[in-house]
Amino acid sequence: MYERKILPNLNCGLDLIGEVLYGKWKIRLLWFINKGFQRPSELQRNIPDATRRVLNIQLKELEEHGLVQKKIYPVVPPKVEYSLTEFGKTIIPVIEVLGQWGDENEEKLRDIIMKQFQK
Image (cartoon, rainbow, N blue to C red; front, side, top):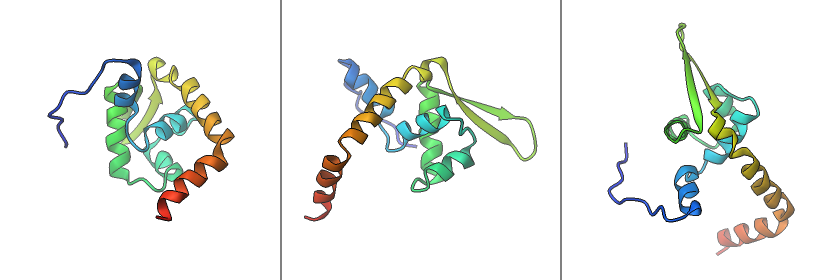
């Protein structure tokens, strides 16, 4: 696994949240876990563009940051479920506001993003 060699810049809240939520699928993982999708296979179905490996890495990072907790049931085959910690639940209102902003500005954002692919 990748090991960082340079210490992150942690001078303000935006730097801190960037370190915790940096990753293409982390916000969506938190959102879907909050909505009740807790098994890795359920998360994979809801984020089909992500590989299982990448989802597992990002889930592990969210767990290390204290936002999600992993429960492994002692059955065969193994059963794993993820849930938000109390700390993780505090980020959901922020994600909701970001989603609303994206919905309100959908057309403009879509145009900006698609222009990048037309170059």
